[in-house]
Length: 216
Image (cartoon, rainbow, N blue to C red; front, top):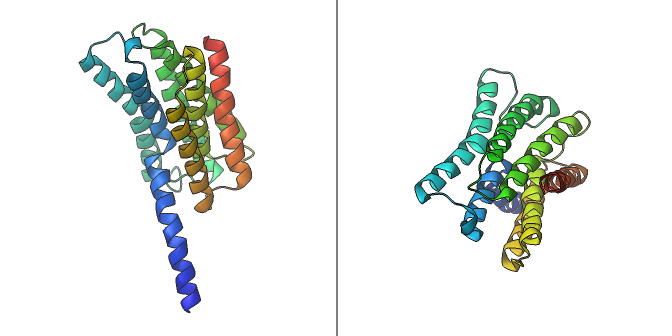
C-alpha cells in the first residue's frame, strides 16, 4: 500500500510540471513568442511606432493562437471532435486545416509588410508548411504538435543567428533546453511515443529550413 502511494506521489510530481510545460509552452504560443523575441533582439528591423508594434503583436497572437484554439473549442462543443486535447488522429484533421488557413494568412500578410524583418515572413511560411506536413503525416501517425512547434522555434532562432551573423549563445541555449523540456513533458505524460516525438521534431525543423531557402 505504501509502495503504491509512493509511486503515485512520484508520478504526480512528474506529471504536474509536465502538464504546466505542455500548457505554457503550447505550440500555438510559439509564433507569439518568436515575434516577441524578434522585437527584443532586432528592434531596429521594425520601422513602426511602438503602439502599432504592440497592436501587431496582438494580431499575431489572435491569428496564430486564439482563433485556432477557439476553432477547436467550437468543434468540441458541436461534437465534431471528442475532446479539446486532440488525442486521436481523426480529431486532428479539421484543427490542422483551420490552423493551416490562419498560418497561411499570417504569411500572406507578412509578404506586404516592409516595416518588419524578412525573417518573420520566413518563419510564418515555415509554420504554414508544418501544418501541411503535419496534416499529411497525420494519416499515418499521430505526430507530436508540441515537438513540431518546439523544433520550429528552435531551428528558426538558429537560422536567424546565421542570417544576421550573430552568436546569441544564451538565447539558443535557453531555446534548446525548452525544446528538450517540451518533448520530455509529452513523453512523461504518455501523450506520444518516442517515434511520434522524433517525427514531430523533424517536421518542425524541415519546415523552417525549407521556408528559409525559399524566402532568402
